[in-house]
Length: 361
Image (cartoon, rainbow, N blue to C red; front, side, top):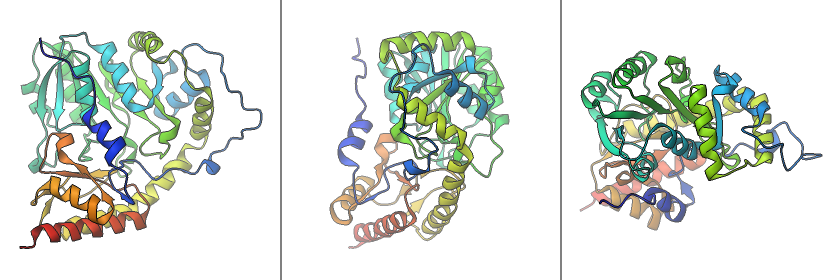
């Protein structure tokens, strides 16, 4: 019997090795100022009434994405949301179809839950876009869950609604659900996006205030699922955390009351940083990646040794990026572009210097 996964190598690395003066390993927006959130601590209750979800927050999240409150399940961030969603949708031994490359914690969680994992390819030469025909060829009659990210982590490739709809049809024919991690989707400001939850009951969606909102400390995550599956998820949450942190619920509710202001800040930051990363990638013959369009991360292929590059950046240039091995492609690196402009500019300069050092005879 194969020993199941009981840890995440990426999360261990992120917590113990990613900190740096110029931290481009982080994939969220620079933290949103607490002072800008419209709430006050005066008279703030520490403990809520309990039950399954804080109704005003469920309504606020659902209202922002056009989802009825009965289909909204709150969670501690997107990673726990993915865990709950997978645990509710599959049983040990069930087959899941997971994109390649993918976020390591998704794959680790599926293996921890005892899933049998199949893969569907995303390819650099196709801009890492998911192909509905590739999903059709990769799925099997045993598949119970298809797992995708949109925007794709680690490349930020966008999956349009027509493609996602075709994937949903393929999954439905196989009797499978589709889990879509949409935590980066709000960063596709140039697209007219809506959650894939609206494409059919077979879709399960996860997201949070962590990435595009710059509010990771609130740990406000959520799942969209059909009401029957949502009820099953609430009962699973009883086993994991019993009761939520009510102060976080109240602050998160205040964020949703002024959500567009938060997103406007993120959009402005990414417009400048997007220009910086486009210019940087265009100037480098030793990095190969699709042209940046949107999102919080890029995933270039490196002509040098990616591991040596990451080590040199940390040891000599106080700069951190994510080694591609955590996304199953060790010849790549993931660069986060959501930091302040000056941090991103300095970090990119340091990447260029390190690449030059590795290329020198």
